[in-house]
Every structure is written in structure tokens, then in C-alpha cells.
Amino acid sequence: MSELTEELKNKLVDILNLPKERLENFDENGQLVGGELGIDSIDVLEMVVMVEKDYGIVINNQEVGQKVFSSLANLADYIRENSTNTST
Image 1 (cartoon, rainbow, N blue to C red):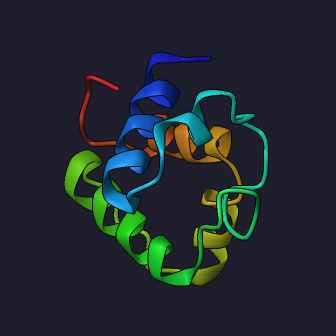
Image 2: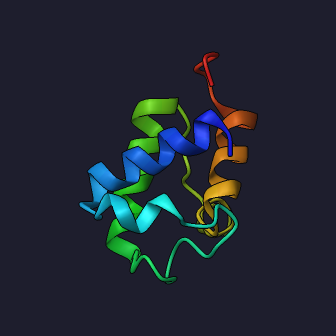
């Protein structure tokens, strides 16, 4: 698991008030929204804001958002490919 994926896990714990234990063994390819973590559309809005604020990426298309937030791995890949922050 990459450093970015671990960073994203920690951010999700913080912004979504998830118990850290729920993400410790979470499969990075597992379903993120609507899956075992209980992430819903309101949570997705919080994740969109986090991605925009922390990584300089705007996700303003529902189709792109569905793909990006389908798994933690997809989210990390999208950030790597599109971030204006060169430290990712």
C-alpha cells in the first residue's frame, strides 16, 4: 500500500469520523462508497472538498466522481495523475 493511500485512509478517518480500526484492514480496492464503511453521498461531498483543498483537484462531474470514489486505490491513482501538489 502506498504512502498516499495510507495518508488518504487517515484523512477519511478524520473527516468522516470513522473508527480507525475500520480502515486498518480495509482493502484499497474494496468498494468505498456504499460499501462496508457506510460512506454515503454526504460523505462524498466532504471527500470532494478534502481532495480539492488538500490536493488542488476539482471534481465537478458526477461520472468522474463515481469512478474516483469507487475505491481507495482509484482515489489515490486519480490524485497522483491530477494533483497540482507535486509532493504526492
